[in-house]
Length: 89
Image (cartoon, rainbow, N blue to C red):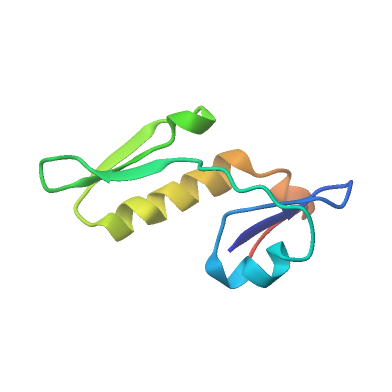
C-alpha cells in the first residue's frame, strides 16, 4: 500500500480494497491513474499517460504490469520520501 499524508492532513494513496474503511471516514475521490491492458500479442502494458508517464511493457503477465505500474507511481507520483512524508506499507 502507498499512502502519503500531506501537511494539510489530506492523504493520497494507491487504491486498495483493504483501505475501504479508511475512505469511508471522510470525503474521498478516486481517479484512474493508468490502464493495464492486454497488448494483443500475449503481453500486458501499463499505460501511465493519464498522469504524464510512459507506457510500460509489454510484460508476460498482468501481475507484472500491475507491479511495474505501482513502482512507477511510487517513484514518480508521491512526495518527499527522503523526509518521511510518504510511506509504503
